[in-house]
Each structure stands twice: as C-alpha cells, then as structure tokens.
Length: 431
Image (cartoon, one colour):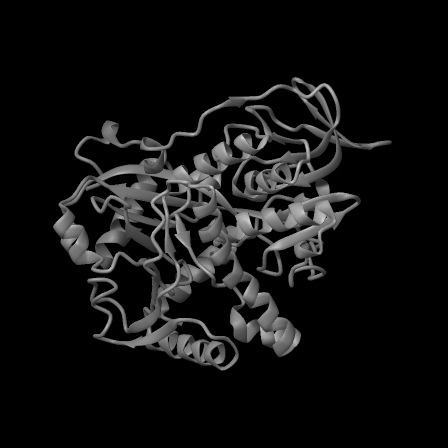
C-alpha cells in the first residue's frame, strides 16, 4: 500500500519537515553589486559564501526560496562518481587528463566536509560510505574492471564485494555483489541548503527571494538582470540554475537537459528494522539503467528511495505506487509498510555527461551535475567564485571541456522518454 488513506499522502519533500525552505526577502540593491548570482541552490549559495567572505558585494536571486529546487529534494547522498567513469575518461582524454578530471570528484567530497565543518552547519553529515550493488553478473564484471582501473591510477578507499558478502551494506537478496566505498556518505539536504543560506547571509551576501530573473542584458559596467521588482546591476554574473534554468539563457537552454526524479519516504518504522536493512547506514545506488537510490533517513526511522518511476507524466499517487513496488522488490519485508511522502525534482544533464563550469559571453556558469550534485555543486560554486575573483585556485580539470548542444535540442527534452523506454527494456531483458 502507498498509504492507508490516499489523502494522507504528503506531496512534498520529507526533508521539509525539519528544514522547510523560507523566503529571504533581501533588499533590492540600489547600486551595482560586484556579483549577481541567479539561483539560490547549493551552487549559488556556495559561490555567494566564498565571494562575500572575500569582501565582494553579492546579490543572489532565487525564483522561489533558497534551496527550494533540487537542493532540498535530492537524496542527500555525497558521492564521487562521474558518469563516464575513470575508464571512460581515460579513453576520451588519456590517463593524465582523465585522472585529473576524476580527482575533481574526490576533491568535492573533501570540500563539502570541510565547508560544513568550518561553517558549523548542522545537517546530519555522516560519511559512512556508499554501496553500489550489482543487479546482474555482467554489471559486477564491469564494475570490477572500473574498480581495477581506479586502483591502478588513484588511491581510493573502496573494495569489491562478492555475492553473499554485502550483508553489512544492505539486507537484500536481489544483488550479485557490488562496490563498497568508505569515504563518501550522506547528509540532510534540506538542513544543508538552509545552513548554506544562513552562512552566506552571515558573511554579507544579499539573498533576494522569491524573485525571478526574467531577462539578462549587457550594460557598460557589466550586466542588468530584469525582475518583476526592477532591474539589478552587477559587474559579474553567475548562472547557477542547473535543472531549473529555463529560457533565461539560450546558451544554457540548448545545453542543459532537465530530467525529473521522484522520491518516496516510508512511514516511521522501528529503528531496529531500519538498522537491520542498513546495518552500517551506507547510501545505496544500484546498477539498473533506470537506477534506484535509497537510504535510511538520518534519524534511522524511515527508508527513502528515489528513481524515475514513470516514462510519461504521472500523478504523485501513481509515482508513489511505482516506487513502493520498487522498494518492495528490494525489501520484501516492507510490503505492508505505508508511504508517507512523495515528491519530485529536476536534475540536469549535458551531452558530455560531466559537470560544466566556464564563461560564455562574459557570463559565468556552473551546472550539469548529472544527478550527483550534492558535493559537486557546492564545490563548483566555490570554484566559479574563485574564477570571478581572478584566483588561480579556481582552475579545474573541467575547464575547456566540451559543453556543446545538439542540432535537435532547443530546450525541450523530447528524446528523454524514448531513452527511458530503451532503458526499461534493457533492464527487463537483462542486457
């Protein structure tokens, strides 16, 4: 069952119970800001924090409330995997460049840990690790090959786990083994977003929300951003809108692909039951093409699971039913458990399947985290801020990588359902 009474199903993030996004009606600046940031999620708030601590005047424009988008809707999983994998990066760019790119993902985990500590953000940070279970034997074989490449080139604390030996990671019989990491983990995404906003404001950033950036025009001294409350001038402009970019920037719109993802939370369970399912409280992401990611809640009383439950538009109730079915396929012991929350958000991909950071026509951007942005978004927001400051520490291995569009894409991802159908078929056939 989804919930004993359909009307009881809460259609907003479980995370909001402890950290609901709030409006932050800052003052519309009368004089130009050094930097205007469009987007009040992890990327924009992290950039604002770095810039404000370096003495620049910063205005953050958020269309809803700080953290309202993916920053308070995600699974709260801190990872260091990039979609192409180290093997794919080496194939594309060679060992030196490939390893340099992968090291950025490793650095992002250390960065988020240090920033949370330095700013004293109470967000249930727990670097208990992550387990990537293999659904099929061929998945485990491919995972092992990638693991061997990482061990050859990089010193990463992880290990392969054979079938029957992953009991400390997850109590489920539907896997053939997997990859266990010891240095990643999770947090409460809503608390983290709220903590970043508080830290940025404390440092001197002006966060104006809700107010939507509607137009961007160049001016003699930089840029003018038009809003319903008037224009805001800035010497520099950073776009930090990720899966919520819309039509504000045609350059970004033709390159960023927003894709929906949905999560559910179960009703409160006994802590003994949740602990038996996740003995070491690791985050879990499986190897399906239409993957599922799941975890215990930080308080150890619920199970949370996310995926892309429907190919075409579906109601929250329908999505909750589909995700409950996926949950029970992993944990049959939860068959009688009710779902209390269901919610959705947007992740952002680009055609290179790698994070994008750079500058176009004088406008800075950082986005495209491909569903793994909890650590990377704050890290690249910080790096984008350093680039604006002219600090060489802002250099990254992502600089200069392709961030191209396709002739068939103008901002409407019509091809995503087609790809999802293909993934579903491959998952069903085990190919």
